[in-house]
Image (cartoon, rainbow, N blue to C red):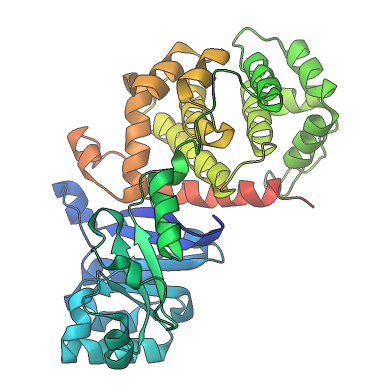
Length: 399
């Protein structure tokens, strides 16, 4: 059993569709010591044999950063090689021995990504034909980076990681990059003026009424039932294989009696968020993953009101989904004070949990160590949440 941390960061193409996920790992010893960086060969080998790739990335590709000293060991990994991109240090292309190892791995089916390549694309294609992808860091793009993504006439894709803003994303698109990873998707694209568009305003008003802590079961039933699309999709979700109910739930009132008002309100909120025309569509998967992880953290640590943690995770990306400033959104909602404080200031126990979720996404053990939770929070908690979120996404997909 793999007992280290597993992180997962989405990688997008130019159309903001999923190209794959960068996977990050932190072994148990590094977790206890607060270490980070690229995982060592033994940690990567153990993860590849203990963690099914479908659980981590579904049917997508996995990009894994591999240190030079761990390159040869990749031949023994347990994952399907044709679905894995090995991101190797740029020096590999300049060292004959390492280049030969990378070439053999490419022959086995791996795609090879060269990090921060040196030299011109033509030389790379001649001397290291096994390389199919070049990986750059957005904050360290060389002056001649524009010559890599476009204009060289070679079948060589380029990925830029660490893209922090939408402006930076658009610049990299113009430069000719093909794939993008970074926090730019978590922020509104173009902040609007003080007036909220009518369709989004109506949705925010519905969310605000739904999340009113004083709403009664009868009022929630009436509110949801008034929206035929929402009530249909909610009952369809509840009766899906994801929940595995033996007997169909045929009304909103029955759903509340079976699951409780809080959960029904949260699932209705997920459906409402999914009804917005937003990009990338991966945002909802990211939000539900954060929601589940926050809730699981609260339950594991025996903290009160785990539904507050779920809401904080779910709404942590609502500004990106709605394409509106977070402050403007939260002023329109009637969220519990601990959730507001967590989302606006990162304050309180809920804010701490949200920070830990972001650390899980990056497989960064430092925040867990600093909070004294490295030996308390099970590492599989985030992996379980990934599986749960993927199942929910499948249940939400149109029939």
